[in-house]
Image (cartoon, rainbow, N blue to C red; front, side):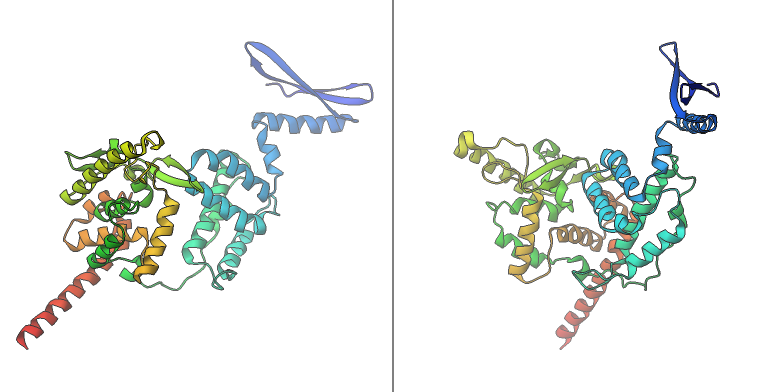
Length: 390
């Protein structure tokens, strides 16, 4: 591409330069540069720089952080990330980043300003709880800022380096290891209490039984369809995740990671439950006739409508209140994992069954809990011996 030229036409000076050929034809761009030759030369240099960088960079450089965050959400987050991640990132940007950092220009945002922002977030009490945010919350907020500004370096080429990469997390006191109470792990007796409250005709029954027997996540259980269930082979393929996007509105997405795609072996008790559910659905098709919703979901209401995440969340909270012990649907996943490990199953097997991308996630969450359970078992055995001797 040529360096361009300037010339005077009437009262104004114009600049021009040759752009890339299109369909083999040469294309020349000419614009008004100002009222003096010097203005035109300056405008030419700016136009050439913008053209060679793709046109958008110069415009973005003059953006505020608030406008850039909107651009990043629209052009990257919404197009590449999963629904729940998009929702969380948008919440962080609107609730934390834009109110504090939004007023700064992208080309002047510094590590010091971002460090002040992170410290401010960590020290500010939340109005609803009166407590400062948890360490994990602050980590997520800093991660969002780092990821956004990372793309400002490349591919957008707005800034030369990421100022957030120099920012440190505030110091937090060591937190105690997660306990069984923290994870809301339930006993088998408590599981039977849940079953007593949710007989087979109850729409909560099937999700309850599947989660307890497989450790599948709520969205994976509700996204399960019959083509993913092999009754004869006694396996379930996890391939879809149901997410709720509004009141009664749901969508099916892929699992959280590649490790989320997995095949889970199931035992005779769950196979029997699945057979009974399929038989019940066939009977309901006849009863409801044309009013039956012909979905392929395993977890459905009597009329064939799928059970959705919002209902499971509501019902789990109510069951916890009614039965008087801490419980959430995710308790079933934690309970399944700890029971397997306490029974002596290998950590790698449990990791793959749960769909964790890293074994460290499984180990960090459950190993110390199962050790606690083993200690409890030893104490129980000792108490038993004392009673026998007495």
